[in-house]
Length: 261
Image 1: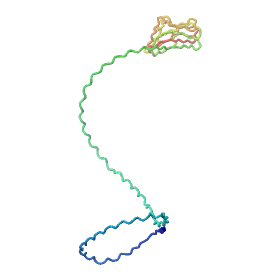
Image 2 (image 1 turned 90 degrees about the vertical axis):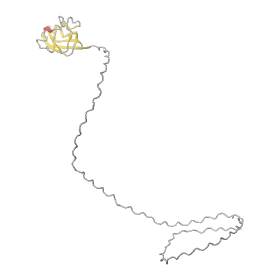
Image 3 (image 1 turned 30 degrees about the vertical axis):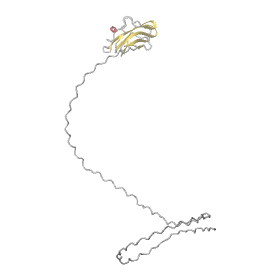
Image 4 (image 1 turned 90 degrees about the horizontal axis):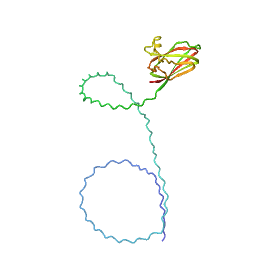
């Protein structure tokens, strides 16, 4: 047996343009449809013949695929130009109305006052007083009065005054001189309200009794006994310093140590 393999013919596709001519004028009116004739008798179906034997399968391989035909031309496609019209301008804002403001309506009547609340409750009990804190330490201060003879021996008489603005108790008196001297300085006292020199303070207002600060051929003397002194000083007391005697000192300092009340 010989098998001949025939390659399929090349297939080429080309665009085909079909031009249709104008349709001719229509004919006359269609005639009336005739009556349908009687249905004929159906013929008898013949017997089916026997199936023939299947032939042997060919030995030849599948023939090669033929070359691909050329692709037809693609029609031109163009996009139309975009319109160039812009957005129209925004219209101007209308003018604000200038009509006058309407008159203010009358004030409504004031409502009646509501009833007062219930009566005030009773006052609570006063709490227990706390314990008094411990007393703080005493405040110690110093009061100094300087008498200056400007290089000469200090003369006797009143040397000046000093206002004490706080209450205190005198605990010590110290008299100092610039040279060894024998000197006595007395201290007078009166209230600020009665201050009127030479009436007050004066000799009758002395607080040093018969033991005023005294130097006897010495530079310094201290006294913390203050026998018979009036040591309690009220706030706003004026102290006057009177030099009773002096032989050499040209500068004296009388310092009082006090404890503030």
